[in-house]
Length: 55
Image (cartoon, rainbow, N blue to C red; front, top):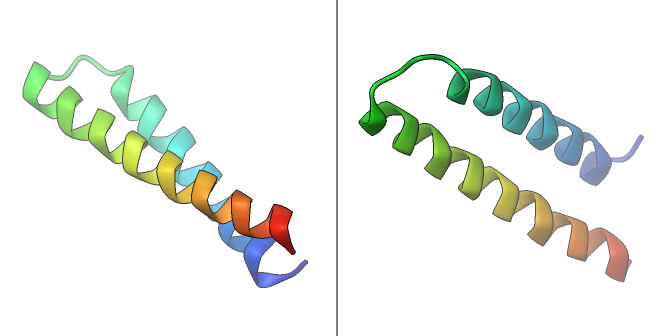
C-alpha cells in the first residue's frame, strides 16, 4: 500500500470518527465545530483523491 492510499484511509477513519461524535448529544456550538472538521477532512480527502486519479 503506498503512502497516498494510506493517507486516504487515515482521512476516512478520521471522518468516520467525527461523524460518530457528531451523532452525540452535544450543544450546537460543539456540533458546528465537529461539522467544520468533517468538511475540512472531506475536502482534504477529495483533493488527495484528485491527485491519485491524475497519477
